[in-house]
Image (cartoon, rainbow, N blue to C red; front, side, top):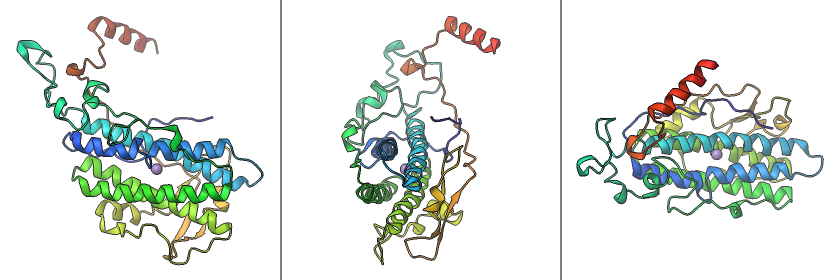
Amino acid sequence: MFFHVQKLLNEIVPDEPDPAAANILQEGLGGQFGEMRTMMQYLFQSFNFRGKAKPFQDLLQGIGTEEIGHVELIATTITHLLDGSPQYQGNSLTPGENGATPLGMAPKAPNVHHFLVAAQGAMPVDAAGNPWSGSYVYNSGNLVLDLIYNLMLEATGRLQKCRLYEMTSNKTARATIAYLIARDEAHERAYAKALEVLGVNWGKTLPIPQIDNLKIPEVRELVEKGVNKQQHHFRLDGSQMSKIFQGSSPTNDGSTLITLDQPPEGFTIPELPERPEEFAPGLTPELMVLVNEMSRLQ
Ligand code: MN3
């Protein structure tokens, strides 16, 4: 079973709304190499795990559980990039009054569904609007094959996020992209280390691709805090992940892998305002009376 803490793994850094940045980030959420895929792939691999090699199951489960938080982080980021982008400044304007078109920009947005379907919110689709697909998930039942594919998934995810970073200067988008780059790096090390335990000698192959992430200032800051070399196990009842995620990094850069017993502290989730032009959340004064009565009871 899973428990939930109402916090985000990284901070939502404030900046202007930016529907174009929101749309490219959809690839990192619902694309073939996005966070929904990593979450589902590692969780299914851990649900279906056979045999007694428990530390490997714990590794898959720990990273898979973290990926739930990555889905939460990138979806929240997309919503904050979309929120307020029609430049609607509060309640003074009644949607449609005197021919007003508060959502007049939506038809020209990269994905009109962000406004038409999702009320300025994230969707489980990629940057081209294709719905996320369960057929992306790879779980062969062969542990070595699954680990190889997971390494490829993390490496491709990081490659695409480095491209995303080059596509936008929006600070809200870049902060999340940088955090996910640093964590992809940690997960690439984790799967490479697991394969190393099983006899693979990486030589000079890693990291794949050999992009110097230290040139990205937001990533450098995270790397200096060790974010790319640490892994929490997300278990309340003990984990054997540290049997794999420890010792020298398979990237052969002199760094050491550390499994953390303490969960991350997390960051406050910024509250989203009501959006009258989307009729969201659509609670009338009469319904708000009921909401307030319920709140008083607690
Ligand atoms: Mn991830």
